[in-house]
Amino acid sequence: MSKIQLLAICYGCIRFTSTWAEELEVQKQSAKVVSYADVLQWVLALIVVLAIFGIFMWLLRKSGNLSFVNKKQLAIVSGLSLGMREKLVLVKVGEKQLLLGVTPGRVDKLLELEGDSRLFQNQTDAADNGLFAKKLQQVLQGKIDV
Image 1: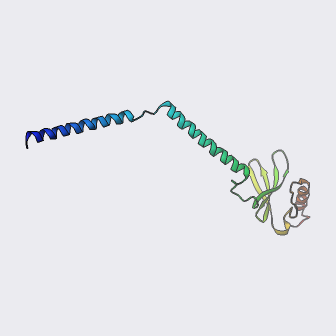
Image 2: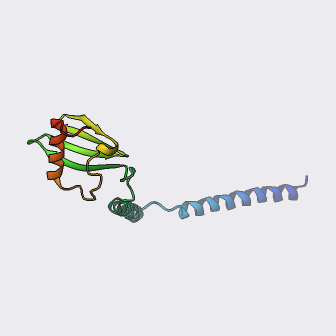
Image 3: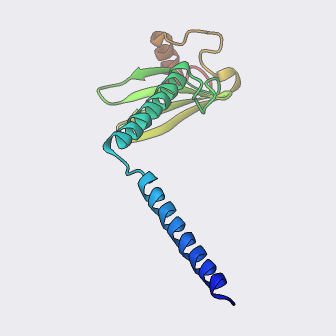
């Protein structure tokens, strides 16, 4: 190899190295440090997204579309307070009705009603506790066959 070719190769290597070093320096300068304003922008964006999600879930719950149980299958038909902490509750489960005794530490199934023995069959408004109390007393006294 001649001296000129050797000088040309050395010059090319030096030129390549200097160009590569300049590119690295440009990349270092263009690499931006995350500033306080950037972090604040990210946090505010996250808060906005979570607020939108929370509002959406609240609206779903209020509209009743978030219910996992079919309301026609499970419902409290009526209730009767027996004291400060005791209640009788009539619950509709599918085609059955359950009479439950509810206390602070316990729930007991007292009676299961099916078919014609169900209470409030023809009533649309089951809020009349007086009728419930009368029918319950009749059932408990044995006047009505269950």
